[in-house]
Length: 422
Image (tube, rainbow, N blue to C red):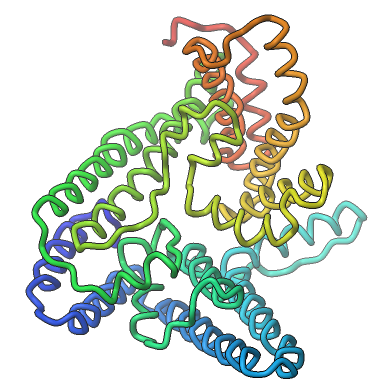
């Protein structure tokens, strides 16, 4: 079931009516859990096993970590002895959950890359492809579950004792397919409170959903027709057409993703729940770093909190900081898709930030020497245009089927100058 389908337009109002008709919060949570599992099973009933397995493993691990933590607090000697088991629980969970994600999402990519490397050295190996369908939302709910385990380990939250409430946290239907990625510290507690039917809140939620449907169905889906045609048959198009298609893709992917997010946030708001804001006018960013503070905020903050900071962040010198930034963006690229085009896209965004940081003192000196008012509207407009050009150029590699196809589109753009196509 997708948000922009007739099925969801029937499922959602029925769910809302029954939810608010139930008098007890436990009954409401039980119904929401059943509705969420039904929503997910509409994609493929078999994969509900993966969702439940991820939930069970991370819930159990959270309890083990909490028990070990309490034992440490009771006795200093036990604190020293139980440091190992506590981190072991986290490592086992990380390996298990990431291994499942890797099998379904990256098995063919990894084996294909391995075969390609061997072929360079003259070795031919035939490894059959894994015939498996990628489970919907697996990248989102696994990251949400992992953040819960890490937060329990760090002590920022306590382990959830109620298994069914934790099941609802992982499977909550507005966000389990396409985000935003929820944090236990913000979302879990909301299932403890009874939400009344508030006309103003419901109205705002419905307006958020309507805006999401508009930018998804009216803008993104219409742009996709032109974009798919040009990217699928790029050799037939020259000059400004590949450039226009790339610019349009920057708009399409925003409207597509932000549209889904707005529908998710609006759906949750109607029910009385507050999800994480995921976009904040990203194309008004004045730098690539600023863009990533505004784009897919729940994922960007996840990588910052659980990878970048864990690697040392900016605390261990500039070179280590640049290394950490590049690792984060390469992983981010791979998270978005199992292809080298996504890895290159991530690497480009990481390189943008590293180069921007290195050149920042020089830029400031030039601006000061030329007496340019950095707070002026004109300067900010130029910054936004330049930022969009860099970001959109990287989107070309994100959208292209292969890296060679992306470079092919670049070559096609320089063949002729045809402004009349506008």
